[in-house]
Length: 139
Length: 76
Image (tube, rainbow over all chains, first blue to last red; front, side, top):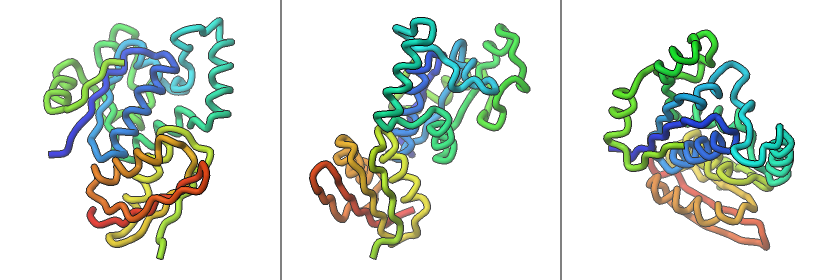
């Protein structure tokens, strides 16, 4: 059986979404299966137009810190989030949206990037994904 | 000799790894994929990924900060 990485994306912060997508695409590139479970603030990033909207987890300074980090990332040749997400999908990465978060935050399927989402589920879906995984992370 | 060439010069983590994986997926069995870049960690991580994927690492060449890696696709 193929090795697997599962990531719970709880944070909607830009830098943490980067970490999650880098680990996700990296795992796929090294031949693993990957599923990412988007919940709470993380689910905000699956809203239409929401992927790049997250604040910086530290030193955001009303967006100034975020702007500076984005500038430095570009200079260092770091790819943009939408490109990493497209690569994640192209390499077969799976995305699950948390239904409880959708209910609590009053998010409907039509608010989300349905083209990116493979499955809508709850904790059982996640546990079933994670029980056979070698790497499980909470971001 | 080389069937697919990918240039990742100036690109950072994890782009060289991703581009290697995409190129291997596109390649036919027996094809040679050549990746060039200058991201230091990828020079050792691409060979790690090649081993994990069960492909054949043919060559790792260095010229200053630049490296060129050749891989033969030996399995789907």
